[in-house]
Image 1 (cartoon, helix red, strand yellow):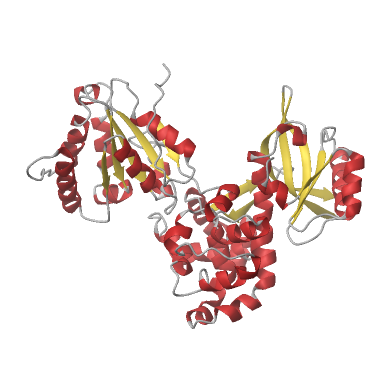
Image 2 (cartoon, helix red, strand yellow):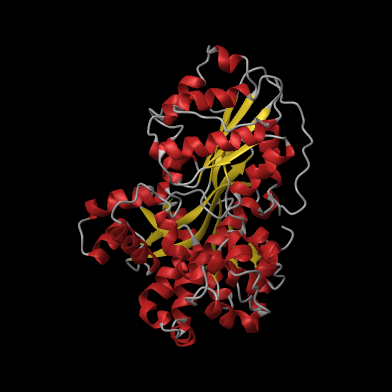
Amino acid sequence: MPRKPVALAKPPDMFDRDWEWSELTAFAADDGPEATMAVVSGRRRQGKSFLLDSLARAADGFYFCAYEATEAESLRRFGEELAQYTGAVAPMRFDRWEHAVDALLALGRDRPVPVVLDEFPYLARATPSLPSIVQVAYGPRRPERLQSRTRLLLCGSSLSFMGKLLSGTSPLRGRAGLELVVQPLDFRQAAAFWGITDHRLALLVHSVVGGTPAYRREFVRDDVPDGLADFDAWVCRTALSPRSPLYREARYLLADESDLRDRALYHSVLAALATGNATAGGIAGCLERPTSDITHPLTVLQDCGLVRREVDAFRRNRSVYRVGEPLIAFDHAIARPRLPLLDRGLAEQVWRSAQSRFQSGVVGPHFEQVCRDWVLHFAAPETFGGMPIDVSYGTVADPHTRTSHEVDVVVRGAVGQDNGVLLSLGEAKWDRVMGTGHLDRLRHIKSLLAGRGQDTSAVRLACYSGAGFTDDLRASADAAGDVVLVDLGRLYGGE
């Protein structure tokens, strides 16, 4: 049975988040006869609490934000705030969460009521049985649930905890009617949010702070670089300044994850990644440890969303790891190696000496990922002759020269009824004007794949550049008809 359309107005001060708002409002106002539950997660600073508090206000619901406290203190605060919400003359007193959850179910006896338990991991840490308590309360035949239309939303910033809440043998598996992950803004949304119209500046800023909304508002207090000429000074007065909250934020992101025990090891893994060690063996070698020692940290960092694993498009048994949060990549490549100097206020000197490392180790890899994101989320199907369904990197062996060629953007997609067709091979260069030599290299890689029996009949060659293209390359692309050129204007433009 389709959900009824709802019309809860989005707050005027909420930037974008149209899809998230529509999903949450549809869940909160669902007129079904039984109580339902949702799980909302996402890294800290993405605006989850703002979304859920706005939802509760718009639908006259109840919002409770937990903090680190004992079970008794949390129950006391919960009772006080619930009494204030219901208009009770005295604070409600609960000595067990079973009674508190039943009180939440009682709120929905007459109408659908959204009820938010924000920072749920704090509550569960003090009361490990709380997920089981919610499971019992939401039993399929329990009268209290059948007679309630409470729309319970459990929210948390610890991705490792929240990701396990509905998986495997978790008590709440199968109980949620909505699972929503609030992601950072994409690179186009981030540019609009920061009010940056210069595409090169937008990508430079995104390579430092990514798409986390709070970094503009709360962390740098709307300090936006005033053009490209101000970017260096902006970095020095924000990400590299001990006076700025942004300076320590990358280190605090790890503190949000309760599953991270040996934080020094996790920081070392991230540092190894940030300095170009992308494979498990490379990371282990950098840390002078056996590969088995870093398998678990890599898995946990993936669960936290701080590291992503990418499988080679042409060698499925090979994969690389990349830092998933731009601020962490920036911090470990630029700031962390020079913390004593930065703590003394020598940001300008550190930044001058880090320019080449920033361009090659931070912006370059970030630009490649932005290009892959563009293909997957913004490129029209006709751009590559089919709908992209998988975008990754790849390596192709060259037996004649006994070397291998890296392909920055490998696109597979759907053409007619065929899925997984190889649609494009692409090279991305952030700070280099691309010419016909880059196109010749891609043609050579295409011939190598064809020689191995790979179907390359649908392949279009693509050049992605942050610095532009030579006239010869543009002429060759026009003449060939199957070459795609993507510059910053196209990345940030319409298609």
